[in-house]
Length: 201
Image (cartoon, rainbow, N blue to C red; front, side):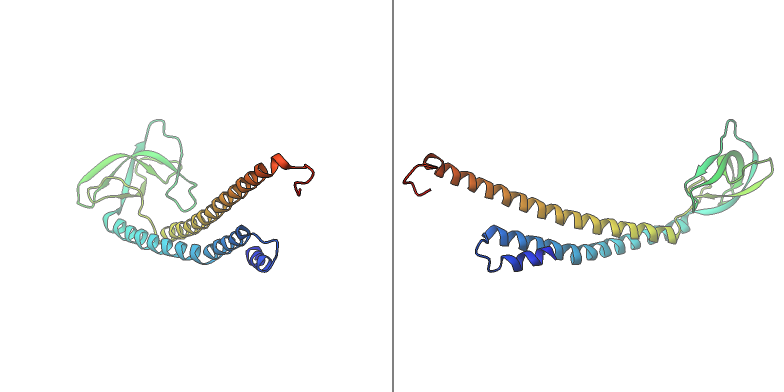
């Protein structure tokens, strides 16, 4: 609104300089770009991110399998870990030595994280593996993918708005520098005769 007011104020003002009008138009252009272009950029980036992430969700669901593992024993010196893969990121998990059957039917064993506070031999729990039975992170779910896509779109919109504002500030800064340089040259020309009688000053 200040940009629009600036253009209207300088329109027929006798004190108006060309740079004043240009500065007001630059501000108005930046405002319009922030209001209309930044949301479009954010929407496009969000849509692309959503497509890519949902494709990743589909691929992970196809390549990762949940199998049931059996606790052999608790791993030596295994403190409780916080699982970042859970919805809250606060579910405690314990390192255990376990055995399980891979999707291809082969028997596997190793140290994995179990969602058990006090694991005992013979306890059963679920883990995610690839097709060969190697433990992997749980697949990305659709809701998390959508959240990431929304955040990506929001971030892209903010970056676009920031870039537009940075360009506006740079243009105004250069205009002010030129204005000051012109003033300095004018003062240099007027300086030798400043205050002398009969010089018209």
